[in-house]
Length: 127
View 1: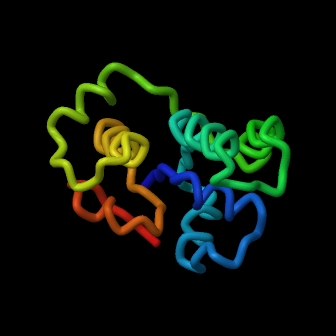
View 2 (view 1 turned 90 degrees about the horizontal axis):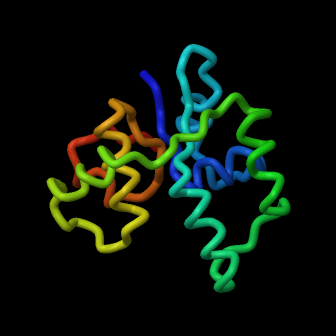
């Protein structure tokens, strides 16, 4: 199984943060699975830093290097992902948190996230 990490799973993993569950860490460390981080998560991180709602330990410019260093792939945003949003129920009003399940469903990925809203969508979620 391959995984799409949400922003917190990605940030907590690269920082060794204790908020990341043991199960999530084991899934992320599985060498047989492909791990993706959405460009949407990078966009959300940048916005939240800019408006003062998120502080990260590393400079934002270091996040791409961390992505590569940890063997994660950047998942770009495609028209198919945006189209999928139209078929999702409005369990969540946050556009970023609607795009993550949309991308995961479209790409056949499971989500690694502690966000319980994702469990309302037809996608496997692990934490």
